[in-house]
Length: 136
Image (cartoon, rainbow, N blue to C red; front, side, top):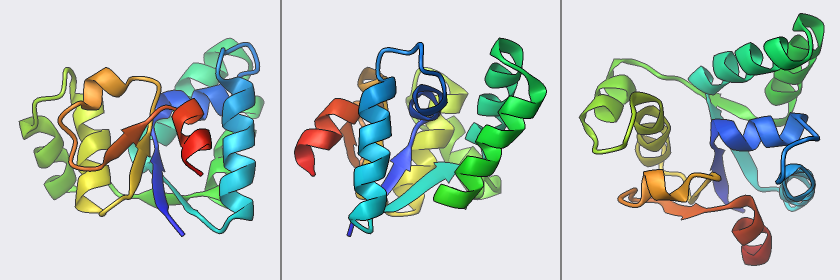
C-alpha cells in the first residue's frame, strides 16, 4: 500500500476528457483504489480545480468534481508549517512549493504530476501518471 499525492494538474486530467493524460489518469486512479493505495490531495488543489472547471464547464459540474475528490481522496491541510515550507523551498512557484511541502511533510511515497521538472529536488519519488502506471 502506497501513499500517493496527486498534483493539481493530475486532478484536472481526471475530470477533463480533452486533456492528453485523461485516460491514463482514469486507469491510474482505478488501479490505486482497487489496490488499496491511499490517495491524497493538498486542500489548496481543490480550489484550483474548482476554479478551472467552473470556467471551462459549469459551477455545478465543478462542484460534482470536488465532491468526487472528497469521496476518493484524503485532503491534506495547508497550515502555517506547510505554507512556510512551500514558500521556502526552491520550486518555481508557490503553488508547486505547497504541493511539494504537502508531499514531504506528510511522508508520501509518491507525488504524481505532469510537471516533474518542477519537483526535481523533492524528497519523495516524483512520477508522471504514465510512469506511475508502469510502477504499479
